[in-house]
Amino acid sequence: MTVGVAMSFLALGLAACNATPTQHSASTTVSPPSAPAVQTPCPEPVTAIFGVRVNPVGAGFAGDLIHCLSVTGEATINDRLMEWPPQNRQLVAADSRSVVELEGSSADDSSTVVVFDLASGGRRSLGTLSQLGIGDPGPLGGVLSPDGTQLAIGGGHKLLLVQVQSAAVQTLATVAGDRWLMPLRWTTAGILATKVGYEGMGDFGLVKVDPASGTISVLNQGPNNQLAISPSGRFFATTAHVDLGDGPTVRYPWQNAIDLTGPDGTATRIITEKNHWFTPLDVSDDGLVLFASDSQTDPVAADMGIYVAKGGHPTQQLSSSFSGEWGPARFLDASRVLVSHLKGGTGASETSVDLELYRLCVDTAAACDISGTRTTAMVLTGTWPTVVTSIVVLPAAA
Image 1 (cartoon, helix red, strand yellow):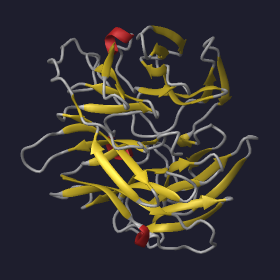
Image 2 (image 1 turned 90 degrees about the vertical axis):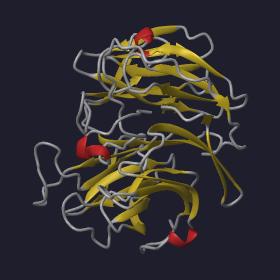
Image 3 (image 1 turned 30 degrees about the vertical axis):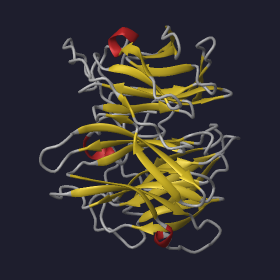
Image 4 (image 1 turned 90 degrees about the horizontal axis):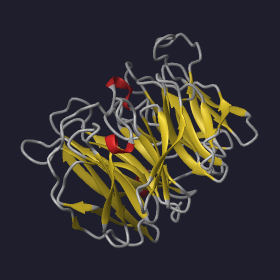
């Protein structure tokens, strides 16, 4: 998962795996010691972990927080702040055992990578970014091994392997100095990662890294624009520009098409539409694609909002009232999704972001309105940009 500060208008366009990449800056300033965290046990069973960025109305906490969420039955939800008191913690990776977070007032090399134990509430430091060998500015991301004993963390032109219990670290793989290796999924076949630049929408290729030897195998040469990849890596969705006479065509070209690539490497065009900007939000191991249809400059149209595609056929599920209304989202299972919902709009004096659970309408050829199935998990008020930054649905719940 990648974490951190959004870059210009690409905040939605870059929400692929999982969230917008952290841009951490090299610094020699040591952050003041953080106050000891007081355990706030997560509700059980823990279904999902999500990060939020708070910009308060008036005085109050400003920064990144991590929440834990339990969904039982059809739609009984219990949301809780994972640790108290509130302080800057960005979500890096999570599984059913532990949550990896980046703690610090800013994402620089003095920020600390911390592991939070979901069962006990205990926490331990793996070291600062500088101590781990990540000192160069750029994106930062991480994934946990299937057994939860190792963390693959990408940053500073390398992929590091950290032992969660001992904090022992080794350099697993390196790339050219103008590229960053961002891990996306740790699968049975290896660690899936992309080679990315300091900024930009796409990448310079999708690769597989052997966690034992560090050998890099090239899966494609990219660019994988707005990449969303299924939990096992069987399917991935990307966007492309088709020349329909809309938007720029060279720098940040209009992303008016979505492609789904399956296990055999065959790509299927899911949708193409003039004057629409598509963002893949999640992909399931069965090939379901959850995506947002939006506008960057034109008024929002009736066919913009949240879609799900099954068998390559997209159907609208929710409609939009303004551009950027829908943020990160994840499949909870084949019929339910967690979706972040912005209210108030960009630039509004006061906004709120909700995390909402919906039941999908997937077995139909026509658009349907699922707004009546909504269960709200969280409402967070603030000023723009108070947003959900990332969502991780834990493997036991997926």
